[in-house]
Image (cartoon, rainbow, N blue to C red; front, side):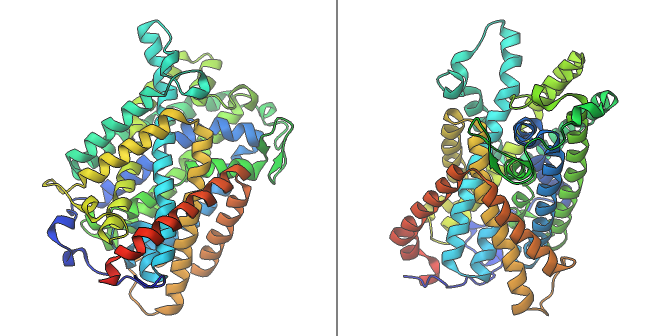
Length: 467
């Protein structure tokens, strides 16, 4: 049995068996597009309504808080990704820097994050696609909605997950190229929204600006509200850059490309989000679009811009799968690396002749499709955030540990003001975790209790470090 604090050596992928080696096929433009494709999606297209319901017009502040914390975490990721250019993201960094048990907990949390992100995005996609499909067919598809909306299961959400999984199985580079094209479609749609909505900006819509206060508090209807309660949910809107770190072994020049991809995509998305948030809450009072499955399209329709609303909804249907692609890609790589390390069945780590892990991609797709078909988006997003916050804390901690343990080691990207940035990332993530719904926190702890059981019964006994 491997020691719980055993650390994995930072091996190059060339040391691996050919069946367990991924193909280097991605340049920095692919990685920036992967990051923007992952970040810009359900969070701004769908969850801005959930955030407005919890914070009112101060959802703008919620976006700023979440964006600051994510920016600090992104800088830590960029440094660690260039120091340890291997697949596995926060799981691998924790394994190399801290030890196997912490790595397992983070890997198990990442499985939760990526699975639920894919599920939440698929539900968000369905929220835009179903009304368009019903309009085209001229009859309602109530049976194809989730159980919380009176249907059997969210079949459109399940369908799109398997379509994206099929693309990933075809090949990483081919999927990344298609992703880059669809990202352009998505960005243009958001630019159209800001251009159309901003002229309707009315300061009266921002009053009262912070109706539920700053800190999390329970409201009369049993929903936890406040700026930080909203930030803890729409934090979901900012992460995605960590999916870039999972592509380390498939980047042509990881030392340069990973840093450009992570930092570049994060900066671009913060600018885009703030512009959209200001335009949304300024154009229409938040009570009119809170908690709708298609808030931006609803705002445009309320402004009498039905053509722009239809264009936005159609663009979301076309382009939201880029988020699915990025996170399903990341999820399959996390599973893949954990299997390659022996902590999960090694058979899952086999790649196809096209250099893609087919088995784990299909298993992942099946898992997340079931979740998307049966659960509502707000519960999925909140629980996904818990897993992400754990990973972000681990990466920031790894960066600070390495600054003490190996201060002179070559770093192709150095985080500026590393200690303040790392501490802000850690404390900010802890505060966001405390701001999550209590039910979500308990679910997260239960998930990790299960994970520790799996590690004790299987992973610790099969670890490659014990061989």
